[in-house]
Length: 203
Figure 1 (cartoon, rainbow, N blue to C red):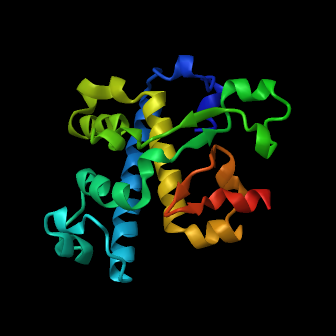
Figure 2: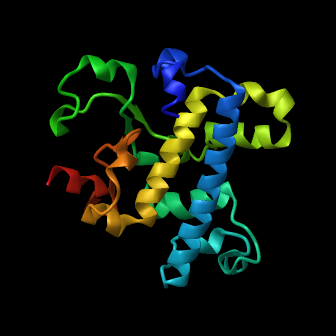
């Protein structure tokens, strides 16, 4: 993604840009999101965590055991109610206008572009970037224009958020590589009433 920004400026005016390189990145990122979400749900459930909506997911126990797969509808039911993903935002650090603000690295003056990759879940709607991914999976030739920069950035932001949930202890302890923050930085979200995982950066 950082390499792409050498040729396409990271600005919302360019968010409808599409290409075969972005297509590959979107497919890879969404597939990774899928795997991460499966792993997060299974590990939490096997550790004794009870999701509020697990009774509303068909074949939940089979899916936890790995004999069936969760889908994005399941992710919304299980992760939105318990973690409020629709309220979580990340800051796109490499946004073009951030470079004009020499103070953009300070915690009280974060500059960039906010992305809320799950906001549609708040009203029960599907995620545009996930719809683009499924369209590409089924017919890349007809749907290659869905591989937009906007969809790639939102899918990457979604992966970032799931990673923070899956590795909450490590994030809070500050034991993750700072390279992880090259593209995104969490923007003061909360989950389960606790201050977000980003606070260790300001301590």
